[in-house]
Image 1 (cartoon, helix red, strand yellow):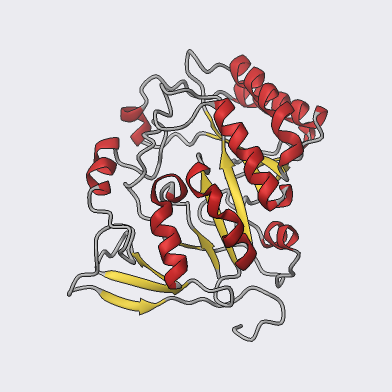
Image 2: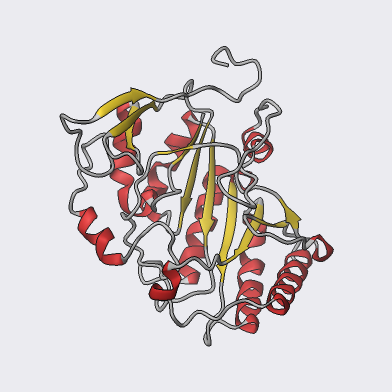
Length: 308
């Protein structure tokens, strides 16, 4: 099983104490977002988790503990650092602070286990194509020696954005071409591999590869292990990732990013945060008498694993 700690919320930035307690107690409970009375239990042991994947915009809270986790588990780390400021990402550290933290993370776990995410790419009157390319060039010069590769994607124009981010400017095909050409060129000049994730369109002519952000090849290479050759079903159209199990919860991230797909609105996340108990096996609240707890399927993807 591939364990995803950061698909529904920024667990690392806001719930590190809880995550460490779950690892210490060797299990976690995850509530089904569609059927709230259904709760799944996952064992958090190296023999039950093929790889523990992290995704965060601030690894500062967990840095002191990363080595102990990475020494026990196969791990992989996505670090999202974009061009945006507090006007778009209110709870996220500055670009320079974030880059400093990424470098420290890479020094601990090694660059093969770290991916820089520059996504979503969106346009406003402030964040123009030129602004993106200038900022990306500045960041790439610093980060290229410390990451395995870079992933970017264009913003998905889902309905919530009409309310949460009315200043958003729709990307034209010309915008996408200019951005892809510029990002690919800058990455190439710095020896940085770059790929899209969840973005329809072929930009290989600009040196940009198309792949999933969480594939067995990537995770296996980073951890020097071999996975079976399996089809990657993906999570949505354009996604080429391997199936994973997420232990987070929607509407719990306090970053307040305007483009966020995982929060209905910032106030809902703040309200839910009050329900968090770092000693609970659930990220939010506690187990109820009406809950149905079932053991999760933790079938291994590793080659020659007896759990297959």
